[in-house]
Structures are given as C-alpha cells and as structure tokens.
Length: 213
Image (cartoon, rainbow, N blue to C red; front, side, top):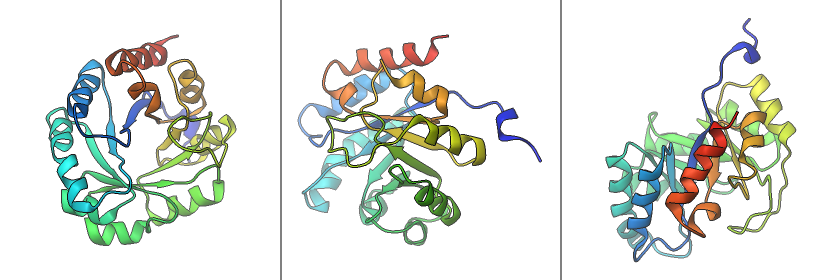
C-alpha cells in the first residue's frame, strides 16, 4: 500500500467564487481576473433570483470561462446546473445529494459538497462519490456569516488519508493562503479578497504567495 504522504501533491490552485451581484460590468471583471493568472474553477453564486434571470446572468460568464478552460460550477442548484450544461455543481448540506446530482447531470459533471468543519460529513461525501469536499471557514469572511470554524489540522488529516481533493474556504487572502496550501488544501476558494478590490492584482498576489518558498 502506498502512503499518501509519498505521493507528490499537485500545486494548490484557485477556485474563484462570484460575488452575489454578477450583473453590469462584472463579466469584464471576471475576464480580467481570469487573464491575470491561472484559475481552476469559477463558481456562479447568486441568491434570491429566479432561474430564468440566473441563466441570463450566467450566459456571458460561462462563455468567458469556457474560452479560458476554467470549469464553470453552479452553486446550490442541480436544476440550474442542468439547464446551463455546467461543468459542475456545488451543494450545501441542504441542496441535494451526490446521487441526485449524478442522476440529473451525469457521471462527468463535477459534484462538490460543503462539509463545514466535519470529518464525518466529509467521509460521507467521499463515500457517496463526491468529486471534492469543501472545508471551512478557516478565517472570518466578509462574504457570508461564519457558523463553522475549521482548523489546519482538518486539511492535514484529509490529505493524509483521502485522495479526493479538498477545498479550503472562508476569509482566504494572499496573506494567509500559504498556510492552507502547506496544510493540504488542493484548492483555495476565494471571493471577497478578489472582488473587494482590484481583481487582477489580487489574483497575481495569490499566485505570488503560493509560489513563495
């Protein structure tokens, strides 16, 4: 049996999450961010709008991601992900199951599950066939209320046992992202640290921090 610690890990990558307001000039901002440095995935996260409007807002963003080979992930809604033909769906604990997502979206669609700070929820998600699990919040966040606090030991534990990738979320900034990467985060979910200022400069700052010795 191969020890997981003996397998070289891929570099930690960025998983960009949208602000709630994705109208207006946001498509231009997204293009700027994605052109500033490598991003693995973009999560389309909107609240309190109907699916028709969500699909209208998603269309230019999905195209921008496709042109740059960035995975387009829909937050919370299996039905919207199916309507858009998205690359994946990210589900909270009350948004449906991995099995439901697979039945609706097929085997090739990425399915991620929010697991907060719970080892039990993460193992359940892994057993159900999730493509990745998301842990957090690791730091206070301006994007959403922090109800669950995760520690670096959670990433270290997951990385030492499981092959399924893990995402670290919650208040991630260029100043604190290095510790998460070292602890075992395969992806860093970033939002406020990018959209609350110059998005291109923020993406470059994340890459500089992750590349530091």
